Image (cartoon, rainbow over all chains, first blue to last red):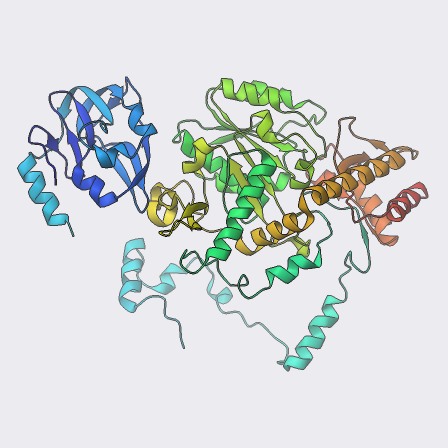
Length: 125
Length: 447
């Protein structure tokens, strides 16, 4: 499982990059969901988001998941590329598959990489 | 074997959750004397006696196969169903209580559903069709659910034509209870207005515009203008279409419709005293994730052979739970199969011939009827196989008179449109011979 140490993690499997403000879902989440076929991002550029509120929805061939904002702030960018190519979430969850960018985002209750690894390992089956 | 749905502990827990002490308390709203009324039933009959009794009661029904000539439509149409439809439908491989969805054992069923989807998408001019709905009315209501989900509840207005089937509008009202949406447009009582008169109702808060094609009064309009206007304001447009008419008309897809739904009963399904019928639902590819119902896709198996499988199921309620756009996770499998067999048996040319016969006979009937003193067509707009006839007397009286002549007249429009007190909606299909049409004209001439 890939868990970059520069990112912060939510218990609901989103990552937040404090440096860039980008948000996405973790490698663990994509591996649990399997092949992702659909992404819908609810929020628009310029909109205020609150940590813990739904911002997107993803569907895989076998499951569906709601994605929650790991941080609060103003959405400066929405990644349209990932909406068009949902499979990016499987291939590059921390890179090309970022979903939104939050300007000056204030992180919610997030974990560091080590804590998230322990948490997700406990949930893995 | 007794079926026990819940254990005493579960019952206890549920009672606690709703906040009542006992089951008796739960049913407190039902007065005691009405809970277990004495039914005063006659003595039990033997099976033989019961069969005779039921058959006797059934014989008091008049039906259009043996007793009556019918010109009644209004959403359900009397068409010829070739024997091959029933024959194929009742084959053991298809005839099951429930559609089996496991691809390992159900390739035939899945392929049949896929064929149905392909035929319907082709007919409506849309990208994708689901595996069907219960009937035309619920399919239309599902269009509302799609639009509501598309705007995530942010748009609250539905604009409906007053010439949308009144029962479909009722079902939409039922579906939208508690959603906090408003329906406007259909309260208009001047039914001579063009569809463009709906345009002022369409605003930036409108999620969906619903029109019917041909409309409930039988008229055919080109909805391009209203569709363009709705799109300019960001709203979706649903066209409720008659599938037989689509064989002859420009498709709603060509007009730019986002969703095309309707009742597919005319395709191989008898009238059956009102059901079960078959709703179809087609849309553009971009809305497929918001579409309700089952969806069969074509793929290849591990050996590279063509095969069929349910697809995009994660959008459905059994997986997506409360976040799904609809609580429908099923389809009208057997009747969708009937429609597919019907379409395949008649073929492209045969289907067009049915449509043409309906059109020609309806126009002959309209022409002859409008020559009668006191009768005239309500509208000069083009029509397909159904038209609104203004009569010199209330429609109910005309129908009663026709019934005495063994003719099931048209649909009495006054119940839904008080302003159309003397108006009958007359449907003519390939089942009506020239003699039958002439007998209707003759009867009304002597009225």
